[in-house]
Length: 317
Ligand code: TXA
Ligand code: MG
Image (cartoon, rainbow, N blue to C red; front, side, top):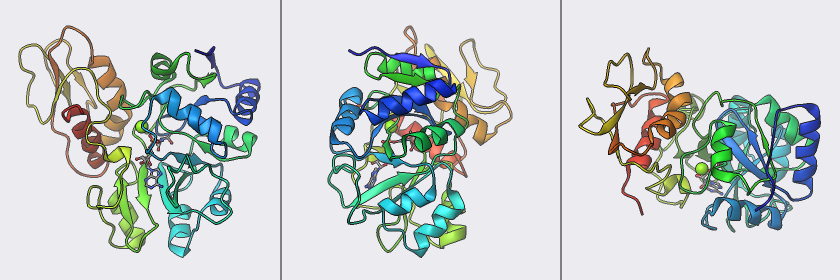
């Protein structure tokens, strides 16, 4: 166990967080998608600490975060196509998988021995300031114990990782609420490995045809592990109403029994994504027999929401 400090995002807190990262320590910090558990991506020891804190299977590669696209171009091979995607979607909820450059300093442990690299430039002022201040790539998976629901507030991080991380920077709830889209550009055909707020339609406007999540046979990614984001209660999808003993998570203006919640009163998918993980945590409480969840339209951000819901509902490994 180590001592965990929860800090409001002041200049002094940023300095302390940057110094902790530079020394190989762990800092949880907000991004626009979810809170990340950050460590120096160029240090095998720091990356090993991340795996240990999350109790994460070692074969799952991590995303390296940098403050701007130029820093990303130093680490990976960005052809014209990758640069166009970077220009269109960075900073933002988009992770690109590209080939490592020969002199790439990222720990091989962070990319699980692959010859590719996942890189992201987050769009969150505090994340950007922290990354600038450290001046090196920061590996950061979602700041939750492996297999659990991703954190969208500092309180979520505290509940899962207190005693395992030196600093938690608290900057309130994340605006997107779902992990970034992961787009593999290392092969001939761009492939979505994990759906997110940057949708397939948005990418296809730029690149033409892109293979959707689940279509690629190539990868073994935690996004690909069937059971992921698992709450303790069983979840039942596409439910019209709750059965006896179940709590209900609706979509739209619902009038359910006590204990019912809605992802968005107005049926707004962006709001639903931002609230999804917090509401799953809120409803995942003793006494109920399960969580019934209303159907979510499989369009736009709904694709990513349904992806996370299917994983949360999948039989546990
Ligand atoms: O929104 C996010 O992406 C958050 C915030 C903190 O940035 N991070 C996040 O990291 O969700 P993580 O480690 O939970 O998810 C990383 C995803 C996984 O699906 C992983 O398999 C994939 O990226 N990934 C990483 N490196 C890869 C590689 N070289 N090839 C294919 N997939 C890779
Ligand atoms: Mg995760």
